[in-house]
Length: 467
Image (tube, rainbow, N blue to C red; front, side, top):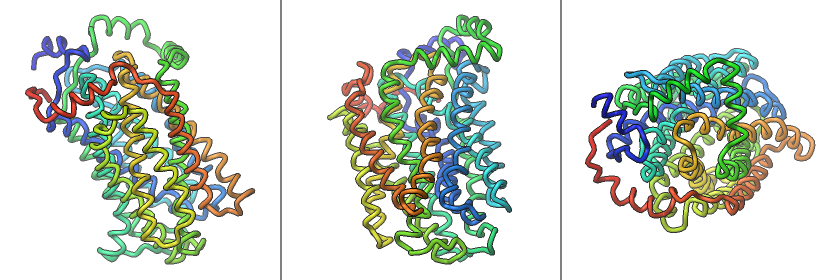
């Protein structure tokens, strides 16, 4: 397709609907990104404890991850909005750079020999994942017409779920099927975890490269005006001023969703940090990180995370149908309330197999969290600042994670006798609050049910062949 024709299609309303193959290609990179992210979520606390971290300090060690996102995501979003190359496009250079760095970090992380090294590698890994991941959200707004964006975010959610399913299950597979040891001498990481991270590094890079080499991008709207604005706003201080100004003038819908996001992500971060120690204590009856029981609990947490991510992958295509009938915000409300109740119920379950039941409902909440807020938000954002505002929106993901990292360890130590299961209970309550806060969210006209009906009915019949 000629550049002139690309320029003619640069406005969102003029862009063609993409067919299933094209949606697949543009979203496939998220399979690898979430592969790495899931390995991080399911195993980093386990690595920290294996290297000697105490329960009350795990949250503080995790704080590098959200702090990194707080800095990296708006900057990457701002820069990607101001990037354009005839071949590389706007977002794909960031996909590529982040994938290279994240793959290197995934190789190094499980070879950490001391606690501080693992903490530093978490920072590097999370920064690298953020460089790749943040522009992927704006990618949907760039590539798709408004009526197809929910479908685009649903496809991303599908790959997020599938990548996380396999990654979460890998340590269990290596231990129980392949026969690698899930224990190691004190201060060392087990082979089952090491090889899981090695595979993650390869999958991360290969998946992102698939999207980079199979998907093209549209140029910015009115490229001559865009180039002039880029010149006028170039420079570090101008960039900082633009970011501050953008935060102060964020759309009303974005501010409403911020409250929902805060309590949602506080809940998920509590789950990621404390599920391994919670299940080891509450179900397997141990706090000894060198014991086989503790490592078995860690493997089973991988299975639990596999379940919630598997349900998320399947629910990704069902949620738009429900939203068609009751609206996006009420769909999100229902999913979060069910997920919150499920997290609380883990406190009462002591049979490891029964733990898979609440994780199904957590998966429903996760699918909705990865789809509905972005589908609602994308219709309320200016196209020329899509990447920036998606980065700013992530403030309301990383700030609650920082709050959880700082406060949960304090509460567990001083009020709950270091029983990690209560972190999941707090997370469940927080998720229910998030669900109820959807009452204050107002969807734009562009996000009406009619648009979702149109995309569900016609998504399989798009005549365009542009990729």
